[in-house]
Length: 380
Ligand SMILES: Cc1cc2nc3c(=O)[nH]c(=O)nc-3n(C[C@H](O)[C@H](O)[C@H](O)COP(=O)(O)OP(=O)(O)OC[C@H]3O[C@@H](n4cnc5c(N)ncnc54)[C@H](O)[C@@H]3O)c2cc1C
Image (tube, rainbow, N blue to C red; front, side):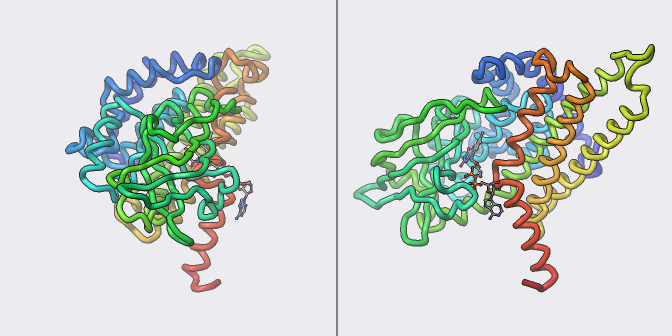
């Protein structure tokens, strides 16, 4: 338990861990192998009322704080990172609606997502605009009663499974809006399922907008402020990706502890060898330091502290870099069996890689962190 985790958080963690162990982990390998949606896990999440953790009670959610969301994502990712991604992307997809959407829009979309009846996602990336989000070319043009959207969004998580997607589109030379599209809207279609290194059960596809009409009621707030709205959600979403990275690393670490205690060579458990213990110690330090930084970032985000942005970037960076290191070491500690798909650690290593790439690559996080450091020093 961490210093900011209360007894309530600890109880909640135990509850989610039980669900993850009993109902999510048993299907993780098959979900990966078949590259299929994690149906059984999603059912368990819906039955446990976890789908609406990030949504307020008045809209059918449970109004949990960010630390509880982080804990849920961590515990689920330790069992199946794909499932954790489906869940947290639902929250990202509805985040701007909660922060800036009209009551009518909130009531239209959020209860469906909070109950688990519908999925959501958000569409920022385009073929020629990834790290440079502001360089996007998807347009929204004002027409009678709404807007017409044209463009192509790339690598969209939860597409085509989700029903609702928040699309960032250009509304002027230097203005952007967030528009909520529905899967059945005329003019909206999906590209084929991307075949990925890891996170294979998480749906990922292009979202194609061909003169797609979006009624005025589905515009989030001011159609000139969309870029600012999205940037405002990134602290929370980066904390959740950090939690996902931490979770998959913890899952690999726990598996490595169990395996090295069981596996014998030279007449004794390999856990007795000093070099193995040295690796285990380094892995434990990477997990503890990543968790401490993440929970501090969560506290700053919840408090609306000015350092929250840089600290969330640091947490995303450290948790994901450490996840790559810890999962790679876990494979090493399994020896040849670590490289075989019958054991979970090779999947965890493949899954971990994406956490260094999405929600702003780790180079972009370093750029943000350095900028904040220079600003704090009053330098360029
Ligand atoms: C599985 C998966 C799921 C995803 N889900 C979503 C989603 O749901 N919604 C969504 O909108 N997007 C999603 N993405 C997109 C993801 O966020 C982008 O891939 C990511 O932001 C990087 O953009 P890019 O791929 O265009 O890489 P690029 O921006 O082309 O970067 C290429 C390389 O250049 C480096 N680089 C770029 N600019 C700089 C710079 N200024 N300084 C230093 N280095 C730099 C990058 O770090 C990287 O190493 C997803 C991607 C994947 C693979």
